[in-house]
Length: 110
Image 1 (tube, one colour):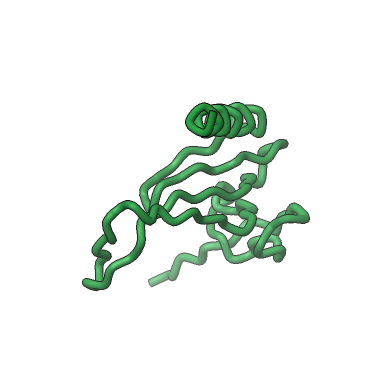
Image 2 (spheres, helix red, strand yellow):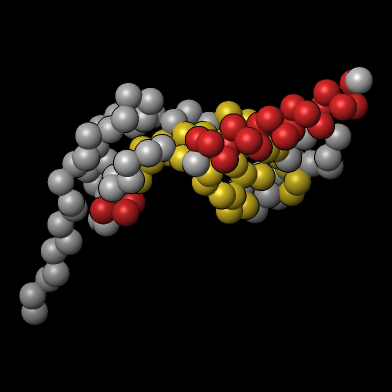
């Protein structure tokens, strides 16, 4: 019986902001070779604690980080909520979203 061998694609050149910075050599597929920046979290302190899989609790949060898949030419800004699937936005879209949030906050403070 012949065993199948899975070869990883060649390492990529990571972006300067990539938290791993190693070229992601152990990923099985090219699409998994993605640079990720350091995650920024904002705790939602007015939301109830969330029960996680092991029965412990965790504060709910919004999160964001920079990401760029190996074959993409521009980075994306990931916008998420807890561990649910979020969405990547272009830098222009993320800037428009940030501006919209700031306008809402300034409208409340006005």
